[in-house]
Length: 151
Image (cartoon, rainbow, N blue to C red; front, side, top):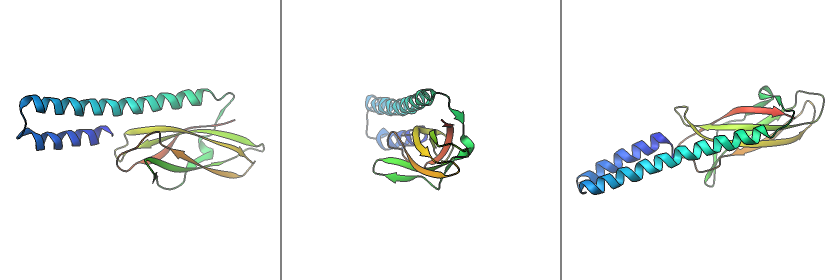
C-alpha cells in the first residue's frame, strides 16, 4: 500500500469509526494505519536496497540506459505488476543486460524497484524481458528504467 492510499484509507476508516468507537478504539485504528504505512515504506526501501545490491554485483558493466526501453503500460499478473522491457544491443559483440526497473504511482512516488536480467542479446539485435514487482502494488503504476548495465 503506498502512502497516499494508506492516508486515504486511514481518513476513511477514522471517519466511519469515530462516531461509533471510544477514544481508545480510535487510537487503536490510528496505530494500525500508521503501522501499515510504515510497513509499506519499509518494503519500498528494502526493494530499493536489494536492487542496488544486485546492480553492484555486476562487474565491468557499462552504462547502457540508452539501449533499454519500457514497452507500453504496466499490467497485472496475479498479485504482481509487470512491465515489458526491451534491450537493444548497440555493440558488435553479444551482451547481457542487468536493468533496474522502478514502478511509480501517478504522482511519481516510488512504489517498488525490480531487477531484470536479459541475457545473450546478439549484436545489433533486440531481446524482450519482463520486470515483475516484488510485491502487490495498489493503484495504477508506471514503469521506468532506473539503471541499465551492459556486460
